View 1 (cartoon, one colour):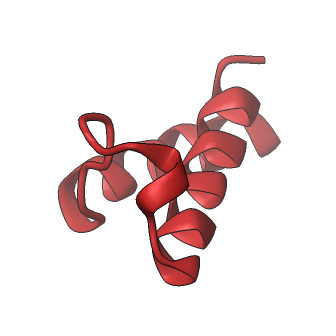
View 2 (cartoon, one colour):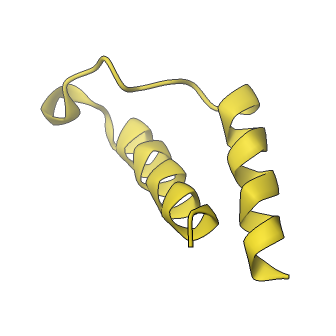
Length: 48
């Protein structure tokens, strides 16, 4: 159950949230850092 939930969240994140892969992590705002951390958390859990 948990795996398919994270896979769905990963697909939604890809469509809805902005892509931050070309930006320098040190220059991101606090909100962008939270979004980046959330996307990373969802991605790692969807790959398990």
